[in-house]
Length: 371
Image (tube, rainbow, N blue to C red; front, side):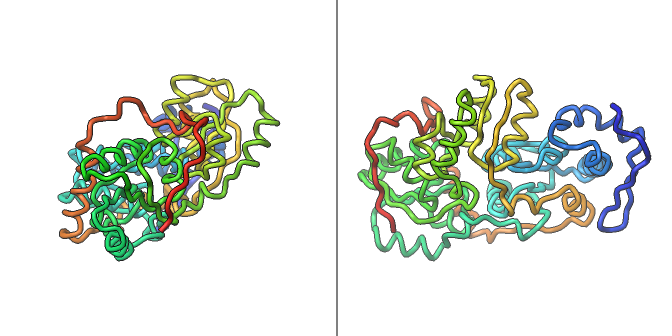
């Protein structure tokens, strides 16, 4: 390692100073090897002392950090104890013996962690870390939907608030949405299912099932900005690149891509196929984090930043540990009902084949009923 040319000092918001000492350099060397293609030496001299102190504080306070796939590499690889998608993180936290959970993600994720771990304290470094998709629908909206469509099951994406989950029959993820929709239709004895709130996820699920889908017009501000023209430009510039898209993308993006799946499915795709070049049509940090474990693959843009995820920083993770802030709570009555919807999904057997939204590209376009 040749990045320690002069003594550097990082100052936290509370005035505490961390020096980039030889000891810090040595203790964080393995982490530097993972992120050095995505973090500059100048940045690392500032970040490494904070990473070392955060990792020390975690042990002292019996805390774990849940780092979502959209966290920046220094958080994801540097301080994350569990990394992955939102539901996977919450399930890992529930299995952990830690007394404190720090959610390096957005607010609905912290709520889900609290729902599955009611006995633990759940902290989020920035209360403003929200989600355009989660904020597109409320519990009151779901109650009105159920009045309009009595007797139909409500399947709700986990990217929603606790109060929305509490009005839900069963939750789903982007990886198991097709399975959950079909199981809900079977259990309720119907041929129509309400799938909320992501419109594009609903449209992409509709292409893989004969169950009719009723959808809400919620969208993720990161994924809705992609379009088919982006894919065509990429194919022209990088004809050998394999293009992977998240199912929250518009349908024309899905149809133009090579593979579509959840963040976990995309990670698995790269790990198993080891493509020479790949494009991930999703949030920017996702590609950086996967690339750290797949150095033989070249990752090509484009990507879109999530402004909410980027509110989480090493600095405010440190401050959260020092000051025990900000705690996320869920009303026990709401949490109990929301937990039932999440647990119904967890109790389903794993799908026979992981979700792949490109399996039915030849199928004609299937519309959904928008509420």
